[in-house]
Image (cartoon, rainbow, N blue to C red):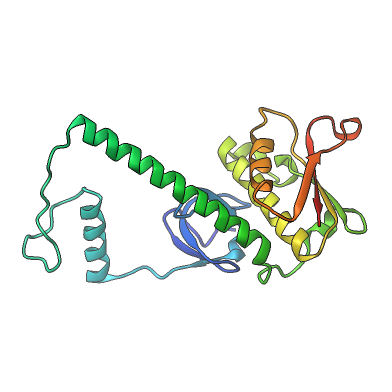
Length: 232
């Protein structure tokens, strides 16, 4: 069955704030690039396609967007609200200082986005309609989640490494949300060893929570490929 979404579609998230542009469509997921530049794997039923602008409004907005990016045909000088663009060459010292300021601003924005993500993960439980951890439950209040990509999708070979990583992180975050919403005691995430990229990213996000403890799972059972998260 052909998906109703296509690359380039503008979409909004149904059960959470935000949205973005569809970058890829597979049989299992719709990949949406948000305003931070990350591709987020979503189910089709989790998305709403935004109506495209038509006619003059669409043409004007496209022209304005190209102009602001320094691309496309220059806008007429008489267009209301558009001032002539004057470019003053920077000295090498000024250019270095400007780049350093941009890097500092980006780091500050990333820190704020991570904090915002942590708050959403902990408090935005209104959109959670069921407990996906029930299928991973191994004891009352405890679950074991295998994040290997072949456990999360039927066609892992169709995904790039980046797409597989985004799916794994998306499922990890979803499980964390459900763990908080359903007052779980412990969740074990099996991430494997590999190059350690998935484990490192999971540990980075876990460090943002104030009300959990996490440790390497017992080597006798999982080797070095799992992390236990305990909820207070």
